[in-house]
Amino acid sequence: MESQEYAESRRSAADAVRLIARTLVYVVVGGVALIAIVTVASVLGPMLALDLYTPPVAAWWTVFTAVVVQGVPFLLLGTVVSAAIGAFVPERVFSKVLPRNPALAVPVAGAAGVVLPGCECASVPVADSLMRRGVAPAAALAFLLSAPAINPVVLVATSIAFPGRPDMVLGRLVASLATAVVMGWLWVRFGRDEWLRLSKRRTGSGSGAPKSGVGRLLEFRAGLQHDFLHAGGFLVLGAAAAATFNIAVPRSVLDVFTGSGWLSVLLLAVLAVVLCVCSEADAFVAASLSGFSPMARLAFMVVGPMVDLKLIALQAGTFGRAFAARFSAATWAVAVMSSSLVGWWLL
Image (tube, rainbow, N blue to C red; front, top):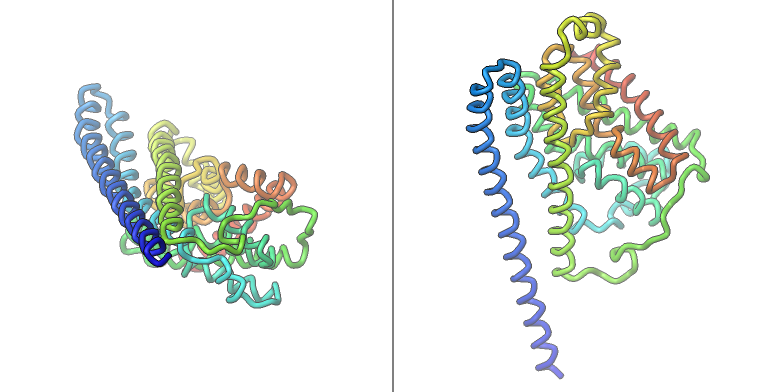
């Protein structure tokens, strides 16, 4: 009997070692391939632009390459952290830390986004899982909004995208946290249970059976692969859209919006919903929109991680269309007002 248990433990250890090795190979090979692709694109892109003899094409490629090259390292770091949180941090930690009073739990859950970061794509299923485990919906929704917006990876990326502008980093932190907390309190006051359609599925962590080390590593690898490929695609699309916006939109049209502080804020707030740029990389897209005021670019960075087309679709599929319509519209309005007030105060 003992020899059989010993053999099983050895097989489990060997499986864990092989899985770790495969995960490391995946990360290394993926990183090398990504660096090679970016390097080749950076070399061949300007050459192709010069061959075409069109300055707009060269300008488009310069903006596109700059946004992608700056954003990819932070995107990779953010997805690694997000996958590690999802695989190794038990969700019961939230229910133990949060106060029982929903009004008090909201600011605590909002501030937890600094300690327990995650991408916006993962925040919706995490919030769903938290609510199914007894966490107050207001607190879970505050965490859903804050985690992708104020985590350390996002704040560091913002500081690099806006060098010498610590006020932009502080403004993003304050405006995003304020939006998450206000939305949580609004749910405490006006939210209704019938607006939420919680799923009935149970994850492995919630079924009572603890995950093995191999299971957690498998979950980490799957989460890393999904988040990086998914968010990386949106980064490329966002960079292409930002570059196209900079080149294709006539300056006379931009002057109509940039000449008015409120119109520019509203335009970039709508653009953030459409572009769907990952929060780890949206600061570089915002920095490339140099024709707009700092307040408008702050609104772009505050709205994007909380309201965009992919998030609305995720919320509708997870919580129902009635919830997604109400929550997204209210979040957009609160985020615009919060970023405008904070921008007027700090920037």
